[in-house]
Length: 133
Length: 228
Image 1 (cartoon, each protein chain N blue to C red):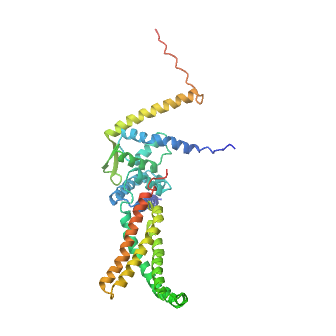
Image 2 (cartoon, rainbow over the protein chains, first blue to last red):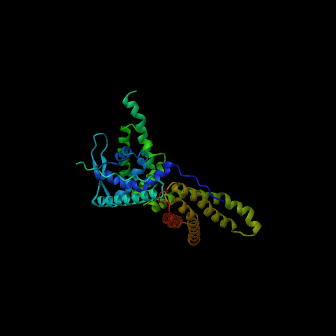
């Protein structure tokens, strides 16, 4: 008898897909601007990732710190208690570069596979630019 | 409604969330300095979220326990660093009333009953004494186990510890009873020294049993990893 499996809800599936790339996203945001955990959540929302909660980001930051990819620095804050601002370490910069390369290679490969299999439309090659005399 | 009135419930929520996280971190036996560092981070971030008009409880999510455990495990913090010593100390202290009650019940109820009704029937003149010692050990064990369970509630490795605790405590009770009997039989009269030895015969095996059970439980436990 065939087993019918329920499809995972789209949100769960998206969360699973994001889970593997979230640390890369956080390193990328920190490479641009050192900031604190809550602000990272806000930036993720602005970049179209509203499903990523602080409850996910903060534990992940503690892991990146324990891995030596980020370090924290306490800075005074105008609006409340001193804030812990995260910076990328040199190792963090190298890791970000490596992880970004991995991400591009993986997504390129999968996208090519999906196109070959006809799951997504093949992009039409762009016409060569005409040279006007 | 004034700004202060609008902020008041959210501040209460920040405090409530912080208290819940702090309580969970305490139960995980985190070092004080680590616990304070995490709650200080949270405090600052929750206030920032509150200033943005968000509910701090929504920021962490509904499962505070999971958040605390993930933070601790992902951050490679040491969980249960004083687990065995804490359980041995508190467990031993909490077991003292259990032993006293067991002793009173055994001497005041069980021994007279056995001496009056069972010993003559079985023609065993000392059966009452034996029953009293056995009852002391069993009642102490039954009294100590729930206390140990309570002390371990919600802590890492609790289930593994509770699996081995009955065996370890039963052995400790047997050693304590045997030691006390040996002291009473060997001493010509009860002296302060003999009483001290009797107490040590009860306390030391109990503390050792709890230490071993907790150490074993933490070692065997896979519960320190978050269930993601």
